[in-house]
Image (cartoon, rainbow, N blue to C red):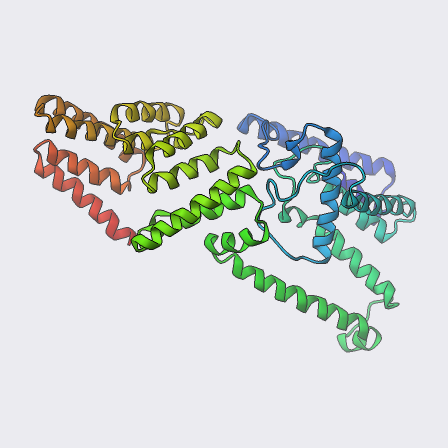
Length: 434
């Protein structure tokens, strides 16, 4: 809404009154868009921003928040000039809060941006191209800067995409001035242009070559999540999010299943160390507690796993995945586990995992009762287990584990026909996925 009148002012001869009218029409469209957005999503913006995503919220001192945000603006400028190193994540605590207004990074960034703003205002009346570039950059950067309103992250490279247009245009103009090129005089052929602007062309080619090499090198990191996380964990070793991402990637079930017992144990111990580092950086991190619970569960430390799951559930009870039922299941406390899974189902009724786990808990209780020579009670448990397996399958038709367990339960109920039917369905899904 600020860039529209900026374009009209710099590149048309519209009088101020006409500019205001056009901008007002655009503003009405913007308001309608926001009304529609709110009617669909129920809100404008993010009501609760976790500290782990935007570390400016680590302090409630507004002055220090703004000072840190201004310091980060300086880092953005440096990335535009020298894009190295790059990271997909800058979350807590990659960029600590500045200690005060004497911080060198804050002072440098503030001085640069004040200079740019003063210069842009000074050249505004003559409609100077650099005034346009600076104002375009500052306006487009402002909405992601955290200076005026806090957003869902304190820094992200993607936020430079739109402002970089102004940066590139401004740099091109400055190079033309440096090499005394009349950019308003159209030169008909490249050979003629090269003769009059050889130094400019050579420098441009060098910049394009170097930045292309950097782009291609970075593209390799983005080949997969595994490649990206393995690379960026070295670039931002103090990012709690990156530690969590990397840990979650190396303990994926499909990866662990392909390892030897020794390699699997070593990987789990490495994962335990990494996720504990993340929790030292920021303890109030439910995702990290949940992941540590998973690691401890795979290490057969069910008591500690249950504590981690319980901590995760306490910090974020809205997510069914955080409930401690799996650890209780591992401890053989099937009745208690069933209660956790029931809670998980209520909190997230669209997630197929809680009903599947609840079915598993009833199945395990059925097996225990059968071992105690209580066939009727065991049968009731097996029937209840299949109710929840069926529920999970309705929610996720290719849930192979649910088919497999349902088949096993039918065998336990003395129905081999149904047992084979569901076991075959599980085998078919496995065959398709492989």
